[in-house]
Image 1 (cartoon, rainbow, N blue to C red):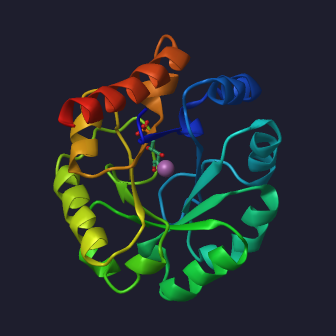
Image 2 (image 1 turned 180 degrees about the horizontal axis):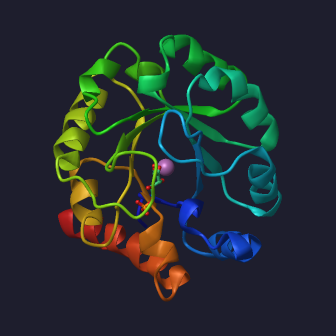
Length: 226
Ligand SMILES: O=C(CO)[C@H](O)[C@H](O)COP(=O)(O)O
Ligand SMILES: [Co+2]
């Protein structure tokens, strides 16, 4: 059984059929629902906000992995907890008091994550890595789905894995942006634990099958390596 988690990004879902797409994920081999919140300030795009998240939470049966691409995320930590987020990830680039932010997320009973933009060095997390449940490596510039995967992500994942091991941290590595069947295995080999995929899943002919195949491909790889 693969330990790799698959988190379909609802950003690529059909919003006219949101309930249908959430239920597809519920019944699939996916592990989490990935929810992208964009504010049009930190990133040049606005996705959706609280009323949509409330609807997602009403229909979703798997953990809600919320990825905040917003300035001053501290203002909304409590609200996201009340709406049902189980995992809350903030961007390193938006948090001048990152330690305080992480503690505030945990105090609300959620798992805490930090996301890094493609240019942000993983070693900047050295002094907080033991406090983190997740580090999300952006493999595209945040703000839009459907972009091409940035190739230096493999090295970043590998470096982060070393940092996690050296620090005796239990943080999981999540990779987000342009993930597909072509890069999934190499990402896991580099040390990724969670793969987020939006367009690759929802724009495919049979999203349920695509999730199943993505999950299976990570499985096969681990068996092959053992
Ligand atoms: O955080 C994100 C964008 O900022 C999305 O989660 C990500 O882009 C997933 O979509 P895709 O797989 O289509 O790239
Ligand atoms: Co995301």
